[in-house]
Image (cartoon, rainbow, N blue to C red; front, side, top):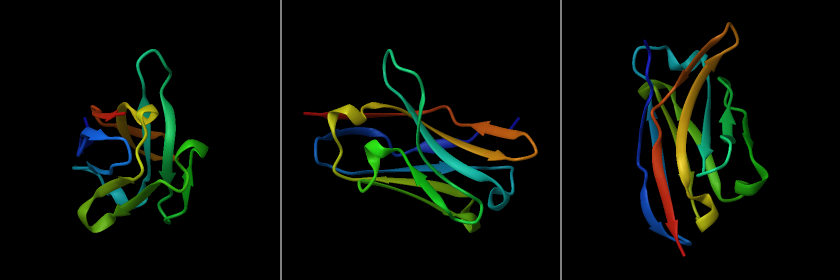
Length: 116
């Protein structure tokens, strides 16, 4: 069973920055698309950003210009750089790796809390 491992969450003041990392042990990460999702209390999980195996990126409108998704295939790691954080960014952030043949893996989540 493959389990991704997120790190880098924490408590930050509004306007601050955090960098999330997601390690993908046991898979050839370079052939997978990667994504970051988040779930706030009482809300559904939503896509924050994703990146194809070729490096094409896509962002939710709410984070465009503030967040950057990237990948280091040599390190089997996915990143999410988050700047200009807002209280509404508070959520549990999950990373995902997926392949079109139906493989789909998730991490356990990391808490991000932005204080006003």
